[in-house]
Amino acid sequence: MTQIRLRNTMSRQVQDFAPIDPTNVRLYLCGPTVYDRAHLGNARPVVVFDVLQRLLRHVYGAQQVTYVRNFTDVDDKINATALKRREEGAAGTLEELIRARTEETIAWYHADMDALGAARPDHEPCATDYINAMIAMIERLIEGGHAYAAEGHALFRVRSYKEYGKLSGRSVDDMIAGARVEVAPYKEDPMDFVLWKPSDDGLPGWDSPWGRGRPGWHIECSAMSYELFGESFDIHGGGIDLQFPHHENEVAQSCCAHPHGEFARFWLHNEMLQVEGKKMSKSLGNFFTVRDLLDEGIPGEVIRFVFLQTHYSKPMDWTAEKARQAEATLRKWRAAVAGIEPAPAAAPSVIDALADDLNTAGAIAALHALSDPAELKASAQMLGLLLDDMGAWAEAPVVDLSAYAEHLAALRASAMETKDFAPVDAMKQALVAAGVEVRMSKAGVELLPAAGFAPEKLPAL
Image (cartoon, rainbow, N blue to C red; front, side):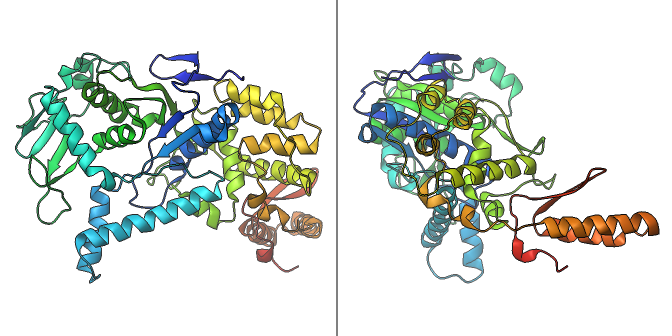
């Protein structure tokens, strides 16, 4: 059997992975808060852990793996949208409007992640379906002295868990000194975090021993993973931005509620995403959703390929050039495997790369070295590439751009004599608007279809 090795955030080492039960390998991924479209950074963990679950199923058996990814559907932004819709005259109670919003955004999320070739998990629990389980866990924590009730809140007593900070590698005192923590009169300690908070009449809420209210964010995954997996399971994943405080708090409350369990044996965190070398942010104008890229004509398979070129533990830089190169490679591979059934198994070189801490970049390098189209197809499908239902984009005819290159070269030659470069600039702008990359040098003019190429937008000659 292939030995999988994974970088465990808890130990800060790459370790041999051995499941608690090889017939029931359990993987939990922190999913999205469903208040709007998923941005590009939200999609990275989906692709990373989709590859991991494919590898686990390959090694242990397709039916021996259970993959869970939750939806957080209790959130102030969801509430704000529902309240706004009610003010604008939408019919229904606030709870109905909240449910409508979450169902709408979950449908968007499914459509966008499906487009990236990500298989849907075995279970996708919604937080609102597990409120009773959260209340039960909070009661257990209070009974054990790890939490307390105060002014309609329930709070976790951080200093009651001696190993708090182990996942993120910091002490409680250092956290207080370097972090922004809410100082509230009902807290025993500034680091104590909310398990339950009160809701007024204008907000959704549930009855609890501490009054009408709603759960804090951190308790959700602890309660849902316990209900679905029990006290101990194999792998818990998410973006590095969740390591602290979200995952640190999950560890504390889960281990205190169920001290005989291990909670998660392995913790995997993917690094953040950048765009053209800069942090993605609305202020920089480089913030976009997965749907934005899809609507621009960039195929989901291309987005996935770009993600997989960088190891999950390293920051990933999305660039237009990477997308163009990914599209060219995928077109070449799809042409090579057209009409061919995949081989019975992926190439050992690809499996070995993936088993080495999910080295997707190494796996792609191994794909380039394969000469058998059937083996290439089977191996690429281990990474969620060259799937039969994702190839329609590559079937579109590739337009011959040579006439445009000759025309632009002629315009440039004329401009060199007349010094009027306006016609050259106008043609370049029209080609770029159609998704064409224009390269002009002393050697001549080269035109390349870029990601999002739209032949119907090409200018008339």
